[in-house]
Length: 407
Image (cartoon, rainbow, N blue to C red; front, side, top):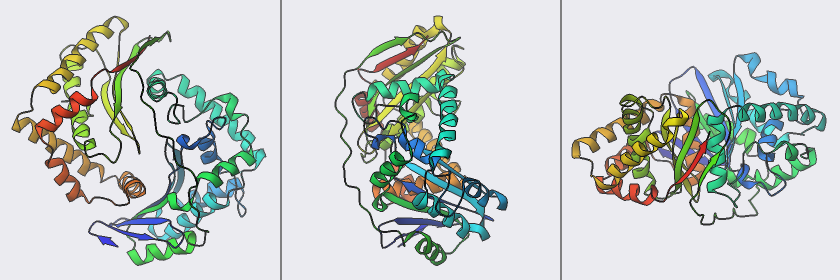
């Protein structure tokens, strides 16, 4: 199927594909698998991330060093990452080496052996990763807040897992997890580069269509309502780290777009965001203040993070609350709304110049929605957002907020 910016197709085993043909000497591809830490059972915490690492430790055809050197010897790279709901293996190579990248991804995803000897070494690497994360309060507070706001659900535990859990995960456990969660109906092969649509589909058929069709045999448990909280945790950090937030719209809800625009106005990555101006520029109270919105398939999370001197936490909170109230009670003028939309559209346009991020974005959109908006379609939706919608979502999301502070 052709839709202006990209080409989509479906392999006989249910794996879907999406390709964007652009002029470039490099080509990128990724297999996006709809399985992450949310799909872990009690006792399996951390296994999705461990399995992602294990993919690089050898296949029925390759030793670990052969996996790691296959593309790097050609000047390319192979990598992977795990989120709450996805595992992604991606590669960047010269256009002439694209089929080699696709073959290698197929091999490690479908033929990994997870040898216990290699897994024993990799555990130490992940323990170091866990320790590094614990040394970064800015990173850690995000995960702690998410654990609290989704407490009691599969979303309410850290992707890395605990060291004690990690020590129990062996080859057999990884094989069981992958067999249960890495099903072909939950996979998308995304690609971008100067390669014809017919050639892309030919390569995908060669390396992915031979795998037997598999279907997920379980459904994810819906998150339950929660009670707002205010908690302070002693960390003896030089600065205080704070998060204010709430649950938000899921990835399929129409209101996610007005909320995304609101978040960008409030604390987006630009110097003229309201929180940056009011807290950092006017008062000089925080070096780092930002707002974020993370949508999941059936829920979401909107939050504001800031760091400050311990004595300035309450004053920062007062200013933040004031900015939220303004957005809840005062309509944006036509000029303000127009400028906010223009800024957001420009940010999206510029981000597509990073072809890897664009490829991963359209791949996940196809996985979750079954379709992908073109940029023009996305821009039309942004331009249709009204000032009344901004007020509506501000009053729905930023009310009865939860607060977490590290001191």
